[in-house]
Image (cartoon, helix red, strand yellow):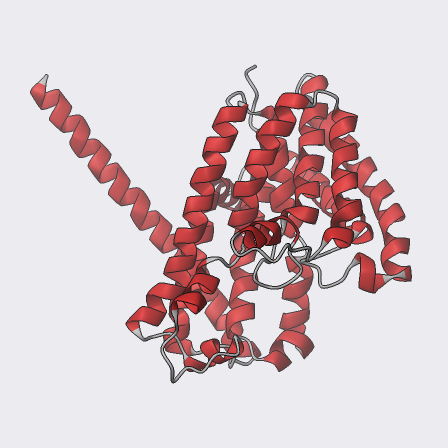
Length: 364
């Protein structure tokens, strides 16, 4: 099937990855007062609730792609997992080994910075579960589910079931080293894994549900986003009372949400993506749209670059010690550095591609 690009999906994915760079800068550099009480901190945390946009668009794109067999999904999941752990090495272990990670960062883990980290502590840092670990593990599940489930409503039902049981299994371990880490990736309750598969896979499966709607409606984008908007309103109405009446259970700490939080935030993110569709179809093409489309095409590399630069920058600017104005400046700095780095990589790749092309022509 020859599927067309869905502009709003590209826009949403590109927008979300650039937004995450801003969120991560706040987390790593802002002092607690700035994070919790400043206008900038409130705004960035509010915008950070749009993380599910990234996951929903991942699900839609996976479902409409022609080349997503079970085997290829498992292979891609393994590659992304390898990239995720390599990113953790670059983020944490590399600067610590070179001695330019600030002591305050080490203290935040409850460790003594005057004592060299042991193998167990390095291993803990390497295993930190980020959104790339979620993506890698989820791709394996997505390949299996896509191969076995053909009915779109079954996809949605599985998403709701995962959300429903997430808080019940959250933190479940067997006391077996190694296996417990795999269980943490699935449903961990601590901050060694920020995005456990339960409940975050729910957003991806809901995206697959909408991808199925798109295909069944002959790739009608207007029908897709009309459906997404209606489902969004319905889920907001269903999820809001649950979160309001029992926030501790249904919202928890955002990263380890319960069913009400998943339903509520899914609804809001569906309506936001529907708004993106209106935006990209009503306004003429412009540099902002092209920029987010570029981000969408290079989403994984941009995500890794921004995290590595932000963590390396702590050797210069410190850890969680900046006020509001300084953090705002650092957001601009790291966004700029991220895209300059990605642009430099593009130029290097083009250079070698052209050189190889000239070499082949010369041999021919």
